[in-house]
Length: 176
Length: 451
Ligand SMILES: Cc1ncc(COP(=O)(O)O)c(C=O)c1O
Image 1: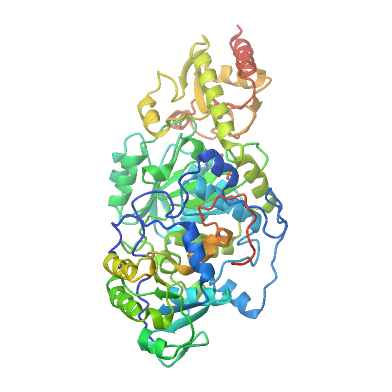
Image 2: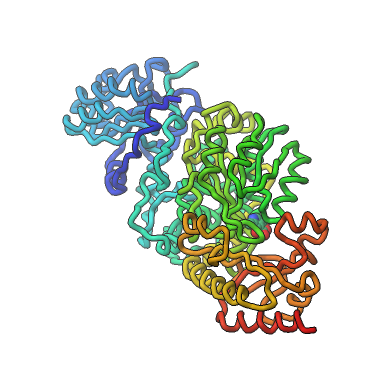
C-alpha cells in the first residue's frame, strides 16, 4: 500500500476540463509503463492505444525494448531527444514520492515535448509538484486513471456497472 | 522482468465520503432515478432504454477480442457477463445508492451468492442478523454450509452481539434494514464500526427501504445487496438482484481477502483490487462468480426494473403514507393486540427510525391479532383487496399469515423468535386509495373476529 493519500480529501475535476484534455490529446508519454501485461499500466496503455492514442512508454528498466509495439525510453529527456512530435500528456505511473522528480523533468522539457498536461495516476498525489507544474503553465490532474476517465466520460465505464456520475439527456457522440 | 509500475490502484481508496469523486452533486434523487446510467442511445437516439435482447457481440478484430477476454477494455462479449440494458440498470442502482459500481443478477438470492462467493474461501465464516428474510436464513444457514461457509446468527438489537460473535475466520457482517418481518430498525452505524475494527466489510440488504428511504453507505456499509424484485422494480413483474460496492473498503488492509488481493489463476494472475481499484469487488463478482455460475439478469427484466425505478420516489412516498395510515388504523382497532411499525409513537424503534429513516419507514410491517392463529387464517381468507401471497414491495397491497405459510415448518417457539408467531400478520401496503385498504382490513377483521 502506498497509503499516502488514504486520509486526503478527494480531488474534484470538472468533467468538461478532463473531456477537453482527452479530446485535445493525440500522444501520451507513460512514465512507469510496464512490459508485464497484467500490470495496470499495461492495461491502460493497451486500452488507450485502442482508442487511437499513441502511448510512448518511459521506463529505465525496459529501455530499448518494445512495449505493445512502442519503443521504450529511459527518461523523458531521452524521449524528447527522439522528437516524436507533440506529447500532450505526461502520465505518471510512479509512487507519489517519485512523481515529484518526473514532474520537474516534464516542466523542464515542456516546450521540447509539447506537453500541456501532467497527469498522475490513481493513487498518485504530490501537491508540491502539482503547484510547480501549474506555475509553469501546465494543467495538472492527480489521483485519476486516464483509462478510467476516458471510459467514464465517453460512456464505456457504465458497460461494466460503474457509476460514471454523468447525468445528461444529450445524445452522446460516438467517438471522442 | 520486474517493473517500476508500483503505484497500483489500491492504496488510495478514498474513505472520506460517499459521492463518487466526479459525480455531479447538484442532481437530486428523483432526477437520478430517471436519468442515471441512461443517456439517449448513441446510435439511434432512442430515448427510453432499448431492450438489448441479445446474447453475443461481434468483435472488431482478434486483438479486440483478446482485450475483452483479458478485461483490458470495456465492452460486451456475452450477456452472461454484461448486457447493454442490464448495464443501464447497474449504473442506475450504483448511482442511487451513492456507490461506485454494481453488478445485477437474476434474483436477490443470486446477488447474495455472488457477494459471498467473492468474499469467502471454504472454511470461512460470517455473522448475520437473525432478523432476515426467511429465505436468506435458509440460504446462509443450510445451503451455504454445503459450500463450507458457516454463518453465525445474532440478535441485531444490540450491536455488541456482533462483536461478541466475531471469530478469526469471520469475513463479513450481514444485516437487513427494516428487517423482516416486523420492520426491525437496525442500528447500522455502530455495527459498521465493529466490522471495520475487525477489518471486515458490513453488508446491508437494503431491499425493504430501497435507496429512497435509506442510504447504507452513509452509515458505513461497504456492500449493499438488493432483491430488485421488490420496491425497485415495484410492480411485481420482474425478478432481479443487485450487489453494489461503495468503493471505500480497503481489501488489502489484511490478508483476509485473497480473492481480491492475490493473483487470480482464473485470469492469468491478474490481481483484481490492484487493477480495478474501487470497483474491483463488483468486477471480480462479475468476472468470476457471475461468469462461472451464471445467474445473470435477463435484459427484459432489467428493462422492467429500469422503468420501475423511474417512479421509485413517488411510489415510496405513497407506500409510506398509506402504511402510516393503515398502521394507525390497526393500532386503534379492537381486534388488534399490537402493531410493529417504526412510524408509530408506540414503536421501540422510533428513535432509530428518526436517525436512519427520516423520510419514512416503508410499508412492510406486522401486527398481532387478539384471536391468535385462527383469527389470522380467517383474516387472510376474508380480505378482498389485499392479495394473499408471499412477496413484498408491489404496487398492490399484500397480506400473509407467516405461521400458516412461510414459517409453517418451524416450531411455535422458533416462530415467535423470528417475529412470526401464530397471531402475526404481515402486510406490504400498496399504493391504492388508502380508504379502500382500510375498509378492506376492517371488513376482514370483523369476519375474523365474528363469534
Ligand atoms: C429482504 C429480502 N432480501 C432478499 C430477498 C430474496 O430476493 P429474491 O426473491 O429476489 O431472490 C427477499 C425476497 O423476498 C427479501 O424480502
